[in-house]
Length: 335
Image (cartoon, rainbow, N blue to C red; front, side):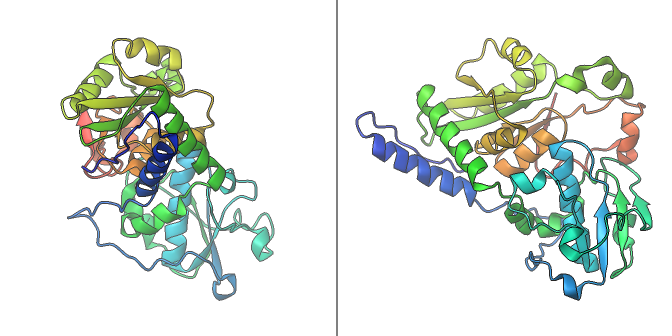
């Protein structure tokens, strides 16, 4: 695994800044890993839409928070390209404020606001698994979809293009770079061949409530994070852990014995993803928010293997009680 090198020279601050800029550029343009045995890559997925050449539209029911919205958008983008349709995104979607996306809305093609609701609807069979039948819809015919589409299998052929699509807007990206530089300086962290930055996403909040537990959703305890941290500590002599969480108090208690831990606070969800994805490696908790951090970081990602309770309602969202369609290839399970 490559390490971004950054030499911290106390008396030459400009050199330190320059080296950090080089590090972040390398991180931004790092090529995605090839995944043998998955689907063959498709490099020619066009970005710009020429609506005059498209006879129909594709719609999805955008629902949930940022991680879910990203999954839904990527599915919509790919299915529209595959079926030669124009992808419809809500006029006020927060995705337009976060990523450099083409604004493919109903108003952009002079269609009425109820155009999507009139279309035949296809609903996914599982919330967190790949549903082949959704890709079997006929081409050039308007359609709408209902689901969360939380499987990398829908778009793995077009992964390189998806990475370009999900590029944060300049203010978000620049803030993340500035924050990481500030964190490194504050923690007196020097990057060399024996060091690494590891981001940790700790999701509690709704997942820690009784209602979610009864539904079958599980969230990691302190033991999982201790095991995951130990995995990296045995592989790197010098590590900086950067934590993002919706429960910082719990996180500080869970990691109280750990050294070199920085807790990120005050960011928006998009800013936290942008910051945490700058790390070399990732420790995930549960949900799509941490999923996207791991995917964007492109390093070693550890995930919590006990996502759901067996025989629960939530388990039914996984085809054959398997997380294979949801968990990205190569990520490391741990408990």
